[in-house]
Amino acid sequence: MTQHHPLEDILERATDETDGESVSFGDLLKLFEDRSFGPVFTVLGLLVVLPPLGAIPGLPMVIGMVVALFAFQMMLGSGHPWVPEFVENLSISKDKVRKAHRKSRAALKEIDSFVTHRLAWATGATARRIAAGAVVLLGLTMMPLEIVPFAVAAPGAAIMLIGLAVISRDGLVMLFSLAISLGVLGFVGMLLLG
Image 1 (cartoon, helix red, strand yellow):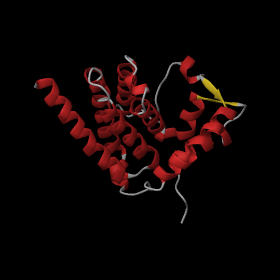
Image 2: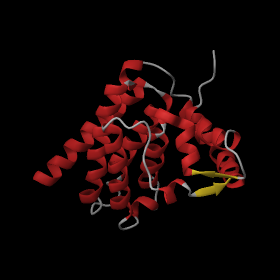
Image 3: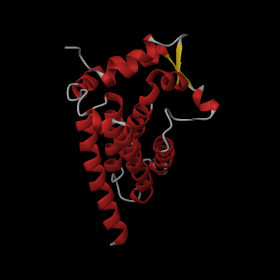
Image 4: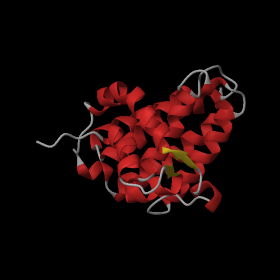
């Protein structure tokens, strides 16, 4: 049976399958084709989950708006995120990517041990559009939640899990992340209405 390492593969493929001595954002979008929203959601969700980044004033709000815009594109059926050319050209050296891969390998391997291709219907086109709608709402919740210390970690974690489900095409992770999303959105709704 083939080993399935979707998160480890992001960094490995970034260095092995791109030309030159640096990796651009555009390179990553091309590498992951119809799954390219996955790494974007995973990274942006992770940024607000990790302390102290999630506590930096204004950062969760900006990330929330950016992730909502990307998710809206996915909801409309776009194959990969559209970004301005200057963002597409942003790059990082392959040496830095390799160092990040070495440092994060153990954690990524641990997460990868839980994901695999399963329940394909839950990561199909319709399910991905539903998940994108959830990500739009989760991104928007980061604005009011920013005033509650560390509360943005909840929508951030749900967005990160949806990204992981898209990358790995793991329907079980998708269903789990959508259940978490409903809980987060319900909580935010009670907070705003109460």
